[in-house]
Amino acid sequence: MSALTDYFKDETFSYYEMAKEIAKIHMVFKKAGVKRGDKIALIGRNNPRWCITYIATITYGAVIVPILQDFTAADVIHIINHSESSLLFLGDNFWDMMEGDQIPNVKAVFSLTDFHVIYERDGKSITSYQQDILKHYRSQYPRGFRVEDIKYPEIDNDEVILLNYTSGTTGHSKGVMLTVNNLTGNVLFARSAVNTQTGHVYFDKGGRTLSFLPLAHAYGCAFDFLTPLSVGGHITLLGRIPTPKILLEAMSVVKPTIICCVPMILEKVYRKQVQPMLEKGPMSIAMKVPLLNTAIYSVIRKKLMDAFGGSVSIFIVGGAPMNQETEAFLMKIHFPITIGYGMTECAPLISFTPDNEFKAGSCGRYLKGYLDVKIDSSDPQHKPGEILIHGEHVMKGYFKNDEETNKVLDKDGWLHTGDMGTMDEDGTLYIKGRCKTMILSGNGQNIYPEEIEDKLNNMYMVLESLIIDDGTGKLNALIVPDFELAEKEGVSQEELAKIMEENVKTLNTQQAAYEKIAKYTIYPTEFEKTPKRSIKRFLYSPSLLNK
Image (cartoon, rainbow, N blue to C red; front, side):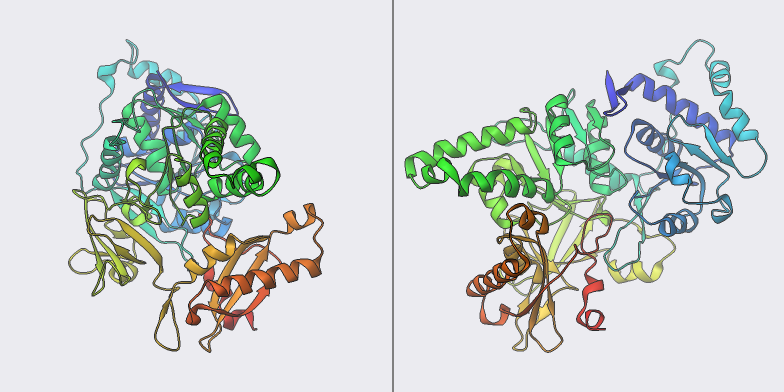
């Protein structure tokens, strides 16, 4: 049965072949003197050997340290050293960004192309052993590798097996210590996820996953990798988030049964393909006829489903807030979408609802039986407060960083997420924004800039925006226009400025008095992002912009 396929190399590993490769890596670990609890770093594009290295490490009892490939060279070197990793597996191109002297704890570096040794610190014993791995493997298993040979050590539920460095928007990554229990809780919940109307199980044996989210991030790792493998699914790896053209081509080939994605994917499809259909041409006229618009919704839904391969049972969206207009339209056409909420510190899942029960504007119900959730507010249903988490998925803390750990984990084990939200009686969560980004108006009103940005970002010619407090209690908007669209439609700089002015005027008619934009600035480039594509808001504070 196929387990892992590299889409571009057309290379596939069956579950049996995976097990054989894991056995070989375990032999190399033993030769290299790897002990339980030792750290092994991993960086490279999503490919079968990336996945095999990950599973080989945790089944040996060592700790895997996956590193996002979008980190800078300095950050990668810092993480390897901070984590005290003794071995490093990487895509060959990543070795070009570092020298052996910069990573003094690392005994050997292995290529994710074919597991050959790229670098060995002292001598050539590991290199020589790996070169003759087939001979050693046959000696170890003289009668061939059999099912009964698959024996892995028992590891306690509270033992750390994953050190996941966050791509935080504050500029400093922290090593999140995740346990067997944290990962198992996520996988067990995902395996039980089902459409309660049809009884369809989302993750099932023989299911097809097209993986394009970074597996070094908790979201992609849990639901594009660990869960599909645990049920006997087939994962096709695209390497990283591709261009829309390549992504849709791959969808038509793989025909995935489940898609995990970030909002940007569906928002781009909506803005580039659906909106023009609804605003121009015959379809826009027909939409105004009540009896016809239902039929048109059905046509659009089928077109979208076919574009994604035609076999998808659910789109699980996470990693960032979803644009409300896009979400509202997708729900109107009965597109099988649900939006979840999580964070690396929970490996990652906090809330999820089957698509048939999803409530607009929410991020699903918290995972009862796995977690307890409370809102730090006098009126959790109506007055936003910080979301606090306790239970199976909560991390042990940050590696070698008690100060930061104590900031987010209180003495009773409650994780302070830093997210502001409300919660329905049934446990459905609604995210309002980050505690750190909340703006307090002059008359004491709480302003959540993300909610204003969501409206502004959906206006004509707006690519992205940031709402900031100018320090006097007034709101400023930094607006990045969609320059590509402007050029395509022949819009001049002067016309673009007028469009943005009209957008702000329209936005202000939709806002309460204390939420109105006092001033706006057209920003010339996209905002700087973390590897997870969150805006580094701290770079755009008024004090820095006015320097």
